[in-house]
Image (tube, rainbow over all chains, first blue to last red; front, side):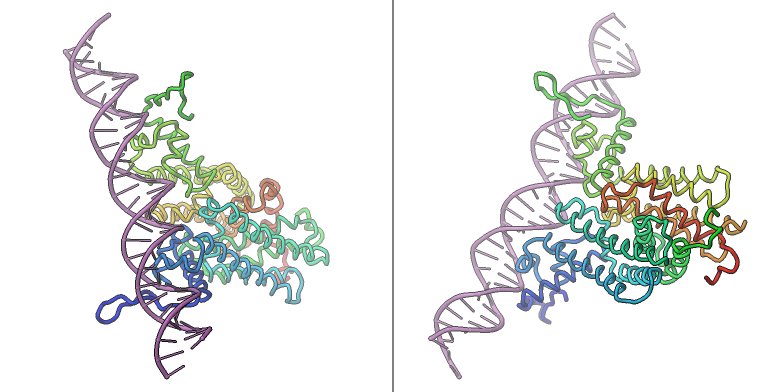
Length: 217
Length: 217
DNA sequence: TGTACATCAGTGAACGCGCGTTCACTGATGTAC
DNA sequence: TGTACATCAGTGAACGCGCGTTCACTGATGTAC
């Protein structure tokens, strides 16, 4: 949606558009930019170009660059929590729920590469203190939800009772993180779905109860 | 080692120091800065202040800011490979080796917070193309070493033969990543040693052979 | 139906700031004689 | 032992660039009358 010029070469003025629409376009463009090149590469000029307006027009719709980031963070949180909600509504015991959450989460991160980029971004850590806190809260909240599923599973015997729920929750995140981080490193060599199918059974075997007599190996 | 002033308040000139020494001081200061505030916060002014010289003096010892980053990357690679080497020299079968590597790796990342900050940095991804490639090579090399241990373990029956070595290696990294990433998120609440003690058995149970008859759960 | 006016998004020029880098100069240290 | 000179790290001023942000102005759209 770049700025176009007429056949005669004159530059077209961007069509006047409602602020509400522009805000969504801007947030979308920002997310695309972050996904493609990281939070560092996010610039007002880059956003404006993608939306098809002039940089200064940006300020008709957002108060500042940080305001867009805030809006994006809200979107991320919504997406992450939607996954948790969906899984919670599914019937099934803890292991099935965790596997379902893993699949959704991995897919979410692989389709929205802006999410890991933002979570790992040191730009955000160095930015507004409130922003860093917001990211923290999002991840901590997600972690708490996973922990909750683990505790439920331990109560009804579907998961091993001796394990620390926190440790299991952190390990669960550890199943997801590499798909987002290592992807760049090893190029296209990591098929996410295949990875989940290979990794999940290993994790499941580790967290479900094991037969008596094997406890001390 | 900030710049000092005499009692009478006059500013002292930094003592003339061999370039070789200064280069180490500068690299050290840069690593400290990255560990504390991330790659984004790395500035010539910040380095100079920590070393106790004036920003422009930096250029007596390095050609550019990128050159320091290159030097740091070399140091990181050395540290990571040292761990792999050490583990390789230890006797023991694959599971013991992996646990040892996990402990070393977790400790390394928790003591050198600059490492994860650099690996996850989008600043580096947006910088020199060669730098991104260098990071990729480091991580890919590490991954290859882990894979090698896994394959050996599968050959002598200490690890389950059906598992994809690549998937196991990626999962292994997944055990380590959260300790580096989630630490900020949950504050001091994650005791790394305790996490390893809790997470390792789960992982081990998943990758070692399991009794016949349990294969299909 | 037509005219005057208010609203508000779009525009280009300009500002200010941070920051990497350059440069001419200083002054300490070591070496040649 | 003393003097002249080369070397090289330290210094402050200045430059240039990118980039977020501001501002006065433009012009399209909708509304009141």
